[in-house]
Every structure is written in structure tokens, then in C-alpha cells.
Amino acid sequence: NINQGLRIKIMRVLFFSSGSGSTAAYITKKLWNSKLDGVELAGFVYEPNEDIQSRFANIINNNQAPNAGFYKVIRSDFSSNEEFHSSIWKSISGLQVDLIMLLGWMHIIPKSFIADCDAVGTKIVNLHPTLQYQLIGRDVYPKIWNMYQDGMIRETGCMVHYVSSQLDRGEVICEYRLDLTKYKNIEDYHLAMYGGKSRAGVGVGDMGDVGDAGDAVVIE
Image (cartoon, rainbow, N blue to C red):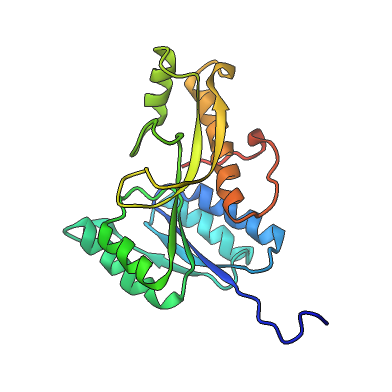
């Protein structure tokens, strides 16, 4: 056996989510279904709410992430964003994580957290619901639709990019483009974006084809 005696490097991935948890749950299901060799879901860092706890309970009940830990964090318990992320790092630093994926993480990653990750070789990527240099930050859907209505843009999309000290400006890994002229209203655009986010997120780990965007209805 050519592989006998060889050790295959396992990429350990950790998901961060503070939205509804739908994108994290969707990608977890795709990862579980694909049985992808060499990738292990180390766990979830999440802020508790009814939606996310229901989705994660479903993951546990279906044994979709058998080796994953669940790390509940609450931003209001800390006086600053830096303290909040420092506490998270203390909780996860021993997990030997290779990749952190921000999936609906509603907090800016501070430079100190990036430095901690860099020191141990952990990469951070973010799933952002616009193309690079369109908009940064949160609540972009109505802003993008207004830009389209005003004739400023004709397409948008989502991207996965490396996290850097500049908000939503890190190197792009992959993107999913959306032709806004195909949609009659913001609701149709928003629905299409749910599928696009899933395609982009799954694509990072080469976790297989998820079909047309319309087949993947996830909400953040």
C-alpha cells in the first residue's frame, strides 16, 4: 500500500457564527455528507440565540460534527471587542486549528486576535455578502439594492477572503457573482444571495458541488 506508514495532514476548521447560524449549519451538513478526507470540523464559536441553538441541536442530534466542540460566547459580558476576542482565543488556543471561518460573525476581528492566529499558523477567512470594494461591514443588502436602483451597479455577489487588519479588504479566495437585473425586488435578490453565500463558503474547503444557488436556502 503506497500510503502505508504515511501520516495524512488533517485540516482542522473552526466556525464562528453570531447570526442565525444557518450558513454554518448548511456547510456543516455539506461537509458531513461529502465525507471529505483530510478535513475535520473542530467546533463552533457562537453567540446564543433561539435560531442558532436550534440549528446546532439538529447538528448534534444527527451526529453531523462528531468531533466538534461548541463554545458559547456573549459579547455583552466584556467591556471591549479586544477583551471579547481575547477570551475567545483563550478558549480555542489549544485546539490546534488550521482555519477559522467567519460565517455571519457580526464583530470586527481585532489586530491582537489576528496576531495570535498568525503566531501559530492559523488562517482566518470571512464570508462577506458583497464583492470586494463594493461595501464593507454589516446590513449591506438594502444598501446594495438601493445602489442598483440608483443605477450605480448591475451586479453584486459574495466573497470569501482572508481576514486582515483592513475590514473586508483581505485577499479574495473565491467569489460568487450575481446579476441583479434578474431580480424583480430586494426579496428575490436576498433569497438568491443565501444560495450564493453557501456556494462560496462550501467552495473554500472544496467540499463538493452544492447545486444551483436556488437549491441552497440559508438565512443569516
